Image (cartoon, rainbow, N blue to C red; front, side, top):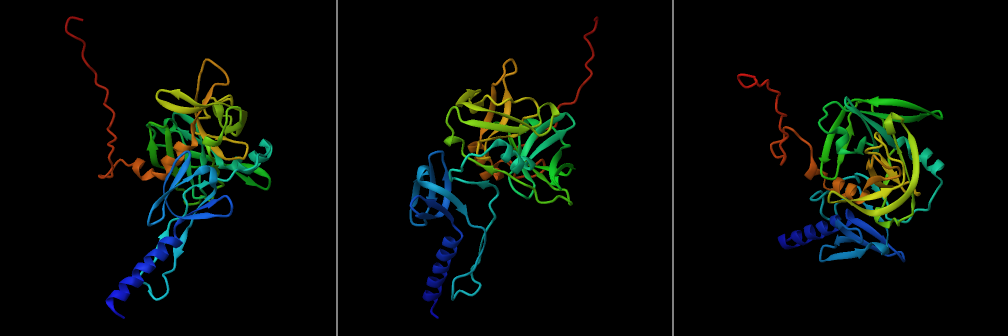
Length: 322
């Protein structure tokens, strides 16, 4: 075989492998777009088709699928090329999902909500995949080196609490108050996890509910509505909700009536009631999609952040004559 033909076959194999391992956008009318997703915006998704870049409006997308697994080389190329696409890190569904009863949803997704404990206090969190990765607030674990996660597993129709103490901080975003943790206990099972929804699709007045541990009262369910989608506080936009949020709810999920996470509860106005706030789930997706940029490490020389030791207390002598 000539060298020119070998290069041609290799080029075809590259195209075939890239196409087979690409992302797929299912559109209305049973159409589909296949390529590499470059960016997900509130109103559109940007897809690289190889020869051009296409901007697809979200209102025509019914589902986004990312293919996982190993792609076999094209015929005639032997083992010259093998392409591997890593499994999806979290679950997200762009399709409209029918509303359900809160009682049924809590039974289905309640196990995915956890308590995050530190020596200084506690907060809430939720699993985003079966491998023990979970989201909580940065302020829940800020400055802590000892973190444990309490999970409630269903056994024979009863909930049993298991505590996992081998917890590693994977990534943090102090400015958006988000942290990604990972349970690394050797005996850890596969965990129930939640689906990330779409806060942009919410409208004011839509019902929502939260599961968390306010004041340590684990697995507390509260319900309310979206009061506003764009409440500006200290330069950031939050979802404002009448759902009761209290200390201990921090880091827990705010769900829509399809049981998908639309926000991460993180604060309330202390001198009022029914004035809770949540980080929109779009910021959570951006944090997870770019988690390497927010990687937490105290000894990685390539880490752009340096976590300095706090200053030690010094006993200063009073001035002479006093």
